[in-house]
Image (cartoon, rainbow, N blue to C red; front, side):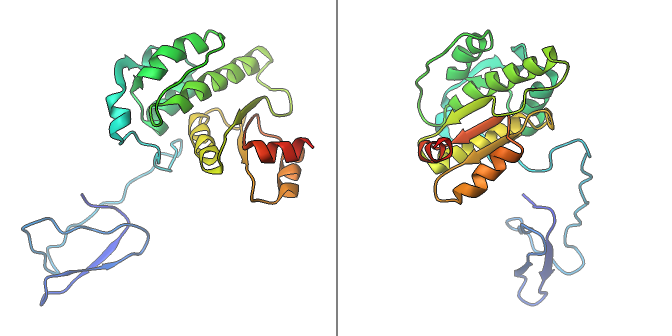
Length: 219
């Protein structure tokens, strides 16, 4: 395929593509085809929707594990708020639920506590984040469109890498709930005073933390 936002020069003598990365990506030469300086492909610029999220989804379901656990149940069948449903469709670009999501989301969305066990890569993060976002959105709706100040939901992750991944997925899920909902992540290996200042000044509604850093902040 061809990636947008790149410049390419073509040598008429060698017929080899020389790449010049101006923004990101490159134009790949189709197999079995030669290009000259006058027949290189023209790429039209993409017009971005001002209301859309420009960042591509880095959490796309490409693993064989995830695909093997997809069901026929769609996210559209769930009783979700419009901003959440839009984020799933336009940002996360998910259509069907995985098995763990199919079994837990309808229950969790009713406010029932759930303990779930599933393989890595089968969608557990959405399984707990989505009901959390919906609970906070519902709270704001019953409170006249606002939320109490402070951290209202806490996700504890055993590792820094997983904590960052959870926060990234949370950001995509709340894309159209902003500025009402905000998320943040605090992990070890960073300046604890900066974290404390960040949480004290404008605390997020959803916080993802590793146990050690959370203990530092609570202490």
